[in-house]
Image 1: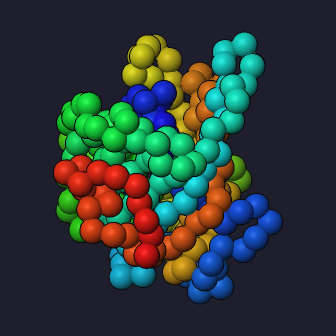
Image 2 (image 1 turned 30 degrees about the horizontal axis):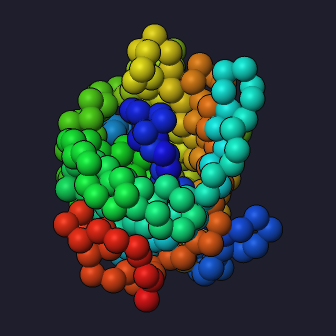
Length: 268
């Protein structure tokens, strides 16, 4: 995905994937059922621990997929669709090849950094995480203490916590008061304990609000995956990702997500 949460237009994530439309995701019959909302969750710390504990030892550890990317300009015109390939190791690593077949243009989130490659060569490295990776995937594959540390460093106010409703389902909201739809905040489905929404000031213009949504979760293995990720700014869609060719727990060759050993990924 060509947008990190804080830089729509740099890279769009994952954070969510699914089987081709109309098909059942691999292993979907094994996914854990939703549970009733836990009345004991009253803080961000409790929520992160509950998210981890619900899927501990069951969530997939690697992931690959392709995605169709649709960009929409402010005037409503859509650019030609693109197809990207993505690979993840959970926790902490996400590789996005900015073409359906490797052409040397890629980005990599790893080691709490963003690496940018052009024509197969590293052209830039900067300290940056992808909050979508953290909230949609890493939270299920690393210790709650680590996730809470990262969220604090990413400037989410973990002291602010309330409940709400999103797309007809009850949710927990961390990072903002109930009347605030602009401050950095994330929304989590109360029954499934899955990340569904991220709101925050847009990087390019902090007076505007970035709104990123993980929609229509489906089972994948003993975890879940979202088939669609939608990026909006002030309520207007600017990008949409739709995922296909999903593989849970694929084997990658050594160095596939290592910035020191860059090249095409040949899945094993």
